[in-house]
Each structure stands twice: as C-alpha cells, then as structure tokens.
Length: 125
Image 1 (cartoon, rainbow, N blue to C red):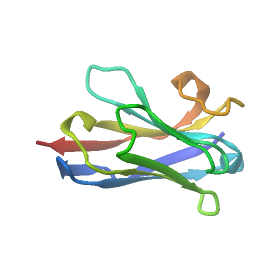
Image 2: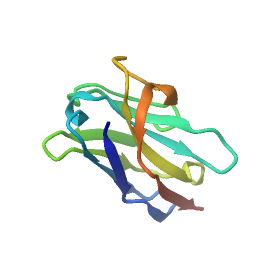
Image 3: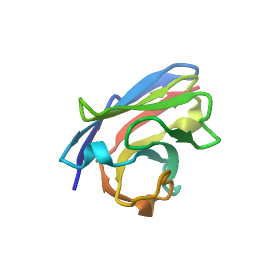
Image 4: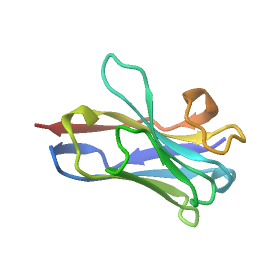
C-alpha cells in the first residue's frame, strides 16, 4: 500500500499555472504507475494524466494534452503535475493515485489502489 498526500492547489486566473505535488510513502512507490485524476462538482472522477514506473512514458487526457505535464522523481518519492494555460473548466479537486495493477498505462480509476485526499484547484475567468 502507498500513502499519498497532494499539495499545490489554489486559486488562479485563467491562463495561469499551478504545480501540484504528490508525496508518497511506502516501498512500492517506485514500481507503481502513477496517475492524476480530477473531479468537479456533480461529475464523475476523470483521468487527467499518467506516468509509468520509471517516468519514461507519460500519457494524457485529450482535454489537457499540450497544457499539462506529469513527471516523477523516484528518489524523492514524488509525482508532479505542471498545469499551464489553465481554463475555468479545469476547476476541480485533483487526486493523485498509485496503480494496483500491472497495466502499462492505466487510466480507469479501478486500476488504482491508493488515493490521496485531493487538493482543490479553482480557475477564475
């Protein structure tokens, strides 16, 4: 089991940037694919970005491709989400998650076994 704590959320104007961090504890972090998800009020949790265990493979939802960048530092047990050119529709609670499967590029929430508590991102117009 991996314990996850997100930070870096906040209020930003449209067009601005934020960097989310997710600090992990647990021996399995460096071998797990990691993902970022978000959930807006009244909507289902949706996949945002993922990274494989080594950081060599990243993948994104179409809605954030070209604006968001996921990365990880296994020496620091941390995964990051750099968010640029933010839009009001990016407003949501953002969660990081650790994969519980051997799928190379997991995207479905059911593929992830550990979740953080979430951090609020609000983008004003």
